[in-house]
Length: 180
Image (cartoon, rainbow, N blue to C red; front, side, top):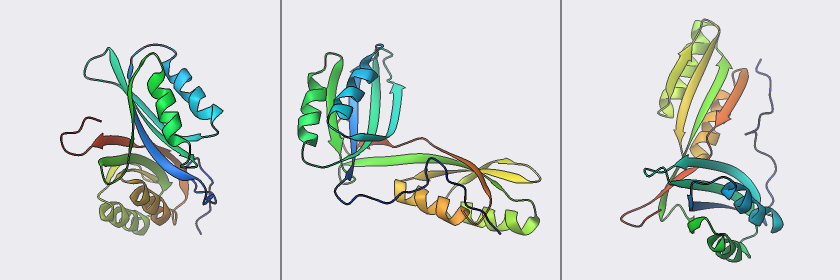
């Protein structure tokens, strides 16, 4: 029988007044920039749900993708405040209609007999995932997609004894010719 292990990505009860927002922030690649941006959100009571930061093609710049929860009122003011910070080049909110939003999940679980491995492989294939590690007793799968797809994969693989999960957080790119 599968046991339930609470991990950092175990869904909690949702507050209907809080909406999930995705922001893309293009910044100078300097120490302290992330701290100053996070302070703007904290002062306004927004919780950062996911954060992905990586150097751009030009190492002078970095791109931050921030997934955050909070009331929709006031987000416009936060974006204006972030845009005023010295090392911020621009900050935009993205919706699923104007951007491609993806995340990656690595999930390690017990699959110690042939039937469990077969069942797990079928689930992984259904979600267009890949097996990235396989031992006689466990598997590590990689699933990519939007958040509901990744959540569904975790749910389906929950029938196995999950050892641990790691999620990247959202990455975003604007659709069409618009810059992210």
